Each structure stands twice: as structure tokens, then as C-alpha cells.
Image (cartoon, rainbow, N blue to C red):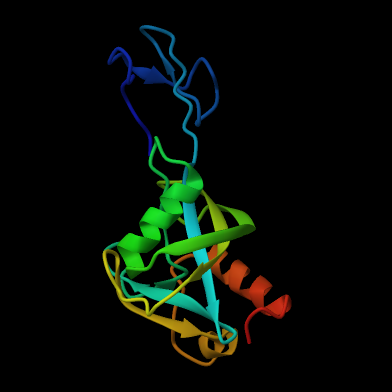
Length: 168
């Protein structure tokens, strides 16, 4: 996304002085507008060697993902993930270690950095918020079906889970 006006003074943002499309500079006050990636978080919940996936509604509708969400400006990444998982699955998650970190370039309008945490949760998940279906799937289930993943980086994470023997 290319912004035209300075968030500080409303002046015109120009690329001419910095020569960097990610750092437009205000021609009025000199403010450099760094366009940094947003942070996303995802919870890897594994049961019986299958991983929880949800089918999305809204953006990327009809595609599947490891349940995920954005970190709000004032949130710790772990707090954000616990909140997002409650909103999307109705479950209270206990987070473990970070399993993967990837840069996501699939959306040209918003570069994100994703953090995937191993997690535990009791109970049966239900689709809420951005999801209309949830279920546990093996890597083989995905390969043998017409399920489409919303995010290429989820594919990397799922392959890694398979390679490490965590899912079938």
C-alpha cells in the first residue's frame, strides 16, 4: 500500500529523497514513514497426529489455515495468540515453544511476519469469528483432498511438522 500523506503533519510523502519505496519521506516535516510488516501468530494444536485447521470466511474465504490472527499494537505475542484462539475456536490455549517463524509475502498490500507456536487445549474446537469449519487433519489428508491453504507459509509449517514426525 502506498500512502500519500504524512501521518504526523498531513504533508506529501515523497520517495525522491530516500529512493526507497518502503521509506517515503514527508516534504513538509521530514518525517520518514517506515512501512514495517505486521505480526501474525498461529497455534499448532496436534491431536492423534493430526493438526487443527480452520476454513476461513471473509478474507481468503473457503481456504484453510492453521488458526491465526494479528497481534494488536499493545499486546504481547503470546497474549495475542491466546486471545485469537479463544475468538476463533472457543478454546483456552496453553502455548509451548515457537515452532516456526516465516515472512509472508503472499499479500502484496501487507507484508507480515508469522510466528507459529506449539500449543495445547482441552475440549472440542468450534468455528467462530473468521472460521466456518474446524477439524483435525493429517498431511496426507491435505494431499489427498481438494483443500486449499490460505497461506503458503502454513504449507511450509505443515511440511515441517510431517518431516519431524509430529503429524501423519
